[in-house]
Length: 305
Image 1 (cartoon, rainbow, N blue to C red):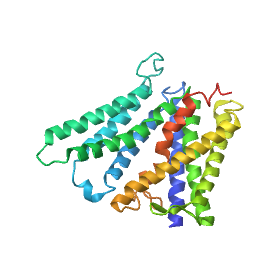
Image 2: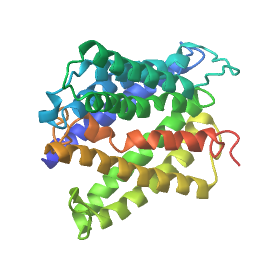
Image 3: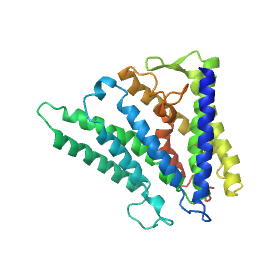
Image 4: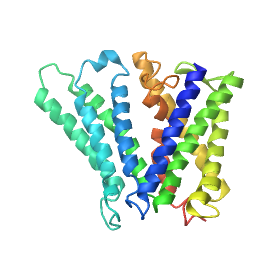
């Protein structure tokens, strides 16, 4: 199992590195000049795969309502979230902004769920349950993935890559450290009923890993990619790493909550040794809007103090 996990992790890291490089290449003014084009395709594929997994967390309930509105709704949220990508220079005075497109996507998903119920309604249909479950998927998967778009668009092509890496690297190094420390020293259960494998010691290791990951991004990757000597004060980087780690743990436990209802251990078997797509992004999804809040409010970037 450990060998499969390591091989899958290595393949995933290689694919991510290639995609990030390609997105940065196509985002440069000398090339296509549209940062996020590759990321859009990745998010759409990941979003649809993750949505299909969430729908089957409880196989018994999954058979009781139609899945296509949730899948199409998720796609709508992601597609609209990336609308600004197709401008070379997105209008600074646009009242919708960048986050507004995500909201419009969610509105479209809600409308689609309601239209489906209107067209298929029969006496005895559990309308509230069906609509709630249909909306949950695009709201949870689509909206949170949608925040990758404005994060990638931060300031310019290279700062956008740094912003995106600050999310990925911080959260995933936290996950790796939590798993490693938990396996080696874990004794006290963090959430014994919900996720017996998680320990307090592992969470402490994850906190250390998240802070370390943030420091690596801001003091190694950022100067290399942007030419800036320093991207942010050290204390802000540590706060960023700690907050994203905590939010990532909450995201991980939230997905465990969904899976436990249906008695599912892994979200799927797409990645041998690692589980499914949701197992891979469960901690990254809720951390995305938090990371964007840090970047968009001036904590980091070329104007950081």
